[in-house]
Length: 379
Image (cartoon, rainbow, N blue to C red):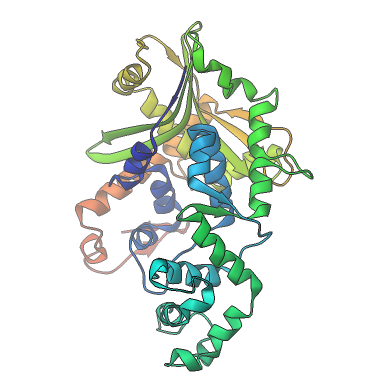
């Protein structure tokens, strides 16, 4: 059978206050200050910001793990080949969110000049400088020529109209849609995963009525590790009841050719993610939760090594499966013992800072840190 987690449960996962693998990677790569900064709203950030590869990855995951109907509920297919710039998207989104369309006779962008002007004023960097042509700003919206330049661009009007039509859905440009679902000129990532012999058996909709195979999508795990609250969201768990094997999987799309996934794995520390997830699904308590979800007793089943199911957004057509070996799982746990750390050290670092409320003065009361010949700090 196929089991899909309700969107509300997935949102609960994102809202739940616990450390996840992404946070641990930030701590190990960029440090605790960057980790904390990303948790806070910093003056100067865009009101609305999206990165195309995140939007594409989310759309792929949604279609496969939550289903076609949920994809339609969450995503709006644009007719635009390319969206406005990041700053303009943020300005238009803020204007839209602060507008009451039903109270305005003219719902075109031209009818919201005053609110657009306020959005321009609110988009400032950490020094208070406006992000959109600060040198042309005016206190009065009637005199602000920046509004005229925005209204003179047809793309901005088209995007505004699509914000209205999308009604809260994530907008996919025509180019992004082609990457996700395909077009006349290219194969999409989703149909590649669903139809290619390498991967189609993992996502076969015919398994909906199978007694021998269960597929559980977006399975959340919440657990305490050494008194630290953690959370994981596994894309896919493929359960073979005849062989009594549980296969935890993560779906990845990468800009690089698929055979360069080993380099992407190193650069983005997917080894840490795989180990973090694998060790949790091996926990008998979480096997019991999975048993409850599938209404089958999974005690005694073997958990196969974590694997990534990968397709390239730049050269699609040959999705591949990359299982982690035992040595790679261990690497994700503890690193190489020299320059690279694993998730366990990440949790240790997080716990030490958490106990001191992430205060530098409490961690280093004398304000002195030595740097050794490995360019690491030594108290």
